Length: 425
Image 1: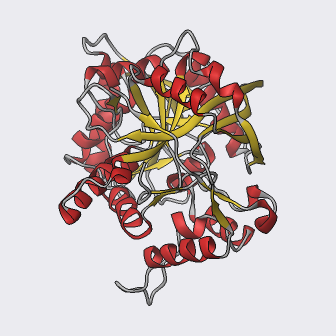
Image 2: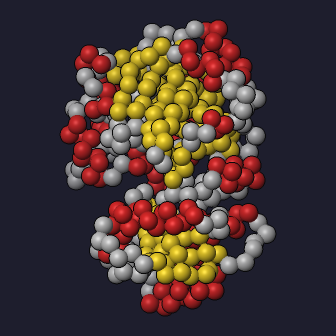
Image 3: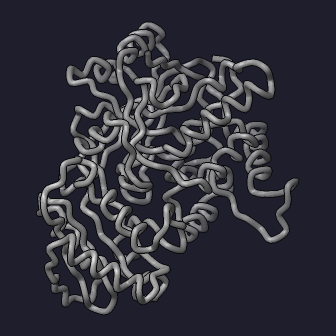
């Protein structure tokens, strides 16, 4: 059974920080080094100093970005820059953005979810995780003992039984992020309405959209605390979660491009040979110089095709569309990220691809083109975005996609609401 609870959120004091947009950021895993600098300069109390602090050459076990994060959190709470709400609440969270030219509105809510192991029929992952980001998030939990960014989950409620209660939220503030997305935060303190939301969610299954590393590390942290304290620690049994009804249609899943490296001349020959065997190959003529426009054209061509398909950029002016030959029995074998992951591992003769060397995951298409042109990687694959139906099938099958198979847009911001793990629920 899914168990959710209200909580006393920690939010920025608008009187002390001014525009909330200057102190919030996207989730840590979509922030580049350039973005990190921008958020550092945006405001001295920007949440970036906690969720993705800078590393320095003199860092050691006693002084590092995790210890500094703990110090910032303690200082900002002491000065009232961050303040804890007086009453437990469920927080409404609405986003407004333009998707394919249309204005989209997405209203979900923030609450605490009791941690459940995968495989127990409550929460379903859809992606594999990478070891390094997981360890990073665990260390932040250990030092700060707080959640700064909600994990993003989806549930099905075709009758909108929960959505009708979310209209009762009292408005707290509105933020427009750097991408033009409008984020509105509200809160529901009425315990009668909170109880109705909690009861309506009890029979729901959750599909983990974003935050696989954070969820896994929340489980690990909970188990560490149980061993260390010889008790469960009520607050550590729960994690901050953003819940969204997948039946409201306002859900955008974007694709994440892959850049590939470490290919020897024989490896490149094997790759080209395999591509000819597995795919119908169509040359894509892109005579324009604008890299951003090139990437947009490639993505639009991909979305027109029903079959599992990629586009590949080989460098120079060579772009190709690839359509999978034949029919496969398993639906997973038609998912483009699965096909590509298996293909690259076979070519490189590796069970696991090393991020930053064999492969990297790029959100912006023009950046993928740039990396190949600068010879930091040898080629780039552009992928058709997966459908919600495909992701749901993977979740319910018990299977998992390769890392970074989906990019749910827009994501909840970091720093909008923080929660203390040591507070009893």
